[in-house]
Length: 179
Image 1 (cartoon, rainbow, N blue to C red):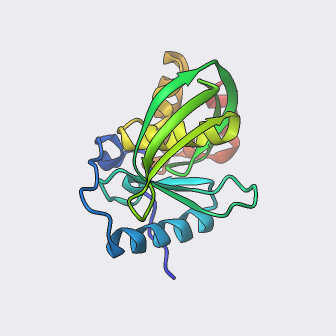
Image 2: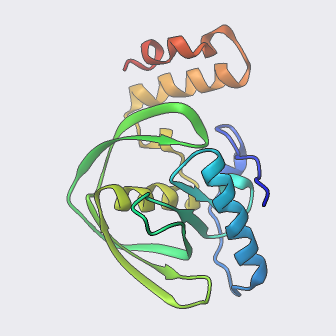
């Protein structure tokens, strides 16, 4: 099996809305297999298709509770409730994480690789994974979930990192981000 490069902050594909699959076939299953390998190699707990440059509504995840990797196609969150703050990172913003507040409970619907409908009620960590991957599919990157001051500092750091300037020194992350 092979892995694919993960798109990083600054890549415009990460800010574009993905489109639904009309037909789930062997090519979709093969893509999902490659995405799972890429997610594990990163390492991460979730990966959206646009993070590898595919503008389709597909994500994979493995919350690490023994169920193994899962694939959800054409996902939508139809309900959410509560509030939960948790430290959250992103494979497209490697090495950084922030406390992010999201709904605690969600109801997600979508399709599996056989075209069967999926309906999952999730909370806490699993719900957070779903919300994070759904943000990707909607063209929203984690830094957009930060407050205005944090977002400005994060974007400054990420631009410096992309340009390989001295401010990209990992030892300066916490200080620059105000953590």
